Image (cartoon, rainbow, N blue to C red; front, side, top):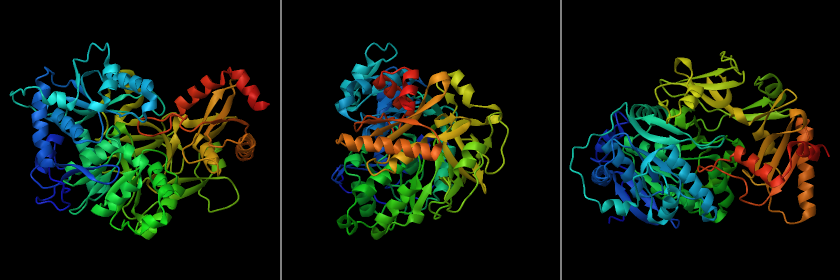
Length: 583
């Protein structure tokens, strides 16, 4: 096997997503020299997959899938490790007219039962007729598949390769057929299967590579993002292919253990485009040492995208400050907004502008729904990040609870319209009707406002807690906890439970590493005092062990699951919880 990574410079003229389908895009990319490169936790190159080889393998695998007797439009579940076999299977489905969907690898092997139940739910929700997993995860998959009548074949890529090939003509997926199924993150409800057509995803990819990133010859990508997340799949599996860029991959679990390997790969291969949720930048900044900086050169990193969760600007500021000696330019940050129901991206800020923030009066926002910009001052403020303007052909509108459009700086529901939107949720007309509104608008479930034509996201609609007529953001309570020296970023979850007479009670669950009881009690009392001083409400603070707070497969905090976990642990009924708080 070729042990050299695929080159950055291609030998074919670059085309920026001007294709009708993903298979057509791969056919063109296969004519060049670029491709995919897979690295291990130590930064060693473990596999190379030029696009020409990916095309040939995908065609062969497509014929093997057809030999299983699968019908056009049926769905194939793939446990999506960061491995060449996933890409081969995904594009085999494109050539065979089948619909793939990616399932996560286990976050940790200590959650066997939870992972199996998660796989089973996805297999059922996606109505999979075949499922494929790497050998190390096959046992999980077989356990999850037990008794599912719709599932006709289950195995590994190696077992699939032993099947004979069907020599019938391949008819690739057409523009108006589903390209794949993308499950939502499940941060606020059980994941739902988002049906994305070829036309929709190609529209989104055109907007990303042409307008959002302004991709050029000489760009190179790097990613540790999981393939089962829309940013990982659309942004860094499909995006490089439709623009014929080479891409360097690090497994998600390897990044979690050794995050600096991601930076070393970017440095070594002169990568120019790499994205991460905020927690990825926070993890890198936490681990980097002065001795590491001398070995890194991040000066070529021109598009450091940020998205997938609420963006906390101080995380990015800390990363930029720590990595500046390695050549990182803070103006490379791109604070983007998107969601699976829109294929991936909705809005991008201007390239080279860096993180632009707006500080607003917290009281005006919570009590009047108005984003009043302030400069410093002693009052309580919220800081929100500019997520830019919609991609070409797309629109964003802010509306009130009755659907009436709001003026600039008025807080409301974020609606999106454009050619990248999903076809709907798989076999769920009721859920589809709730979010696909009249005139082609999509209800995103997010809250935000427009200022000077740019979008600012303030949080999820379901994460706003209403107490005495005031809107309190769960993120504000969590950030208050995270600013304490004993608490790490991402280790707090805030939500409400019903108290006496239906009055909501605020609960903050905090992962805490303190062993000393006096220190733990001090943290609890301090948080309760700060919440009362800042918001005028009493709250219950629960300290739990590390890794207690539930997260989605993409790493997002699940407040719904955190609330359920709290209620199970407390064993209290709602009046008892209210009494505990007031006492």
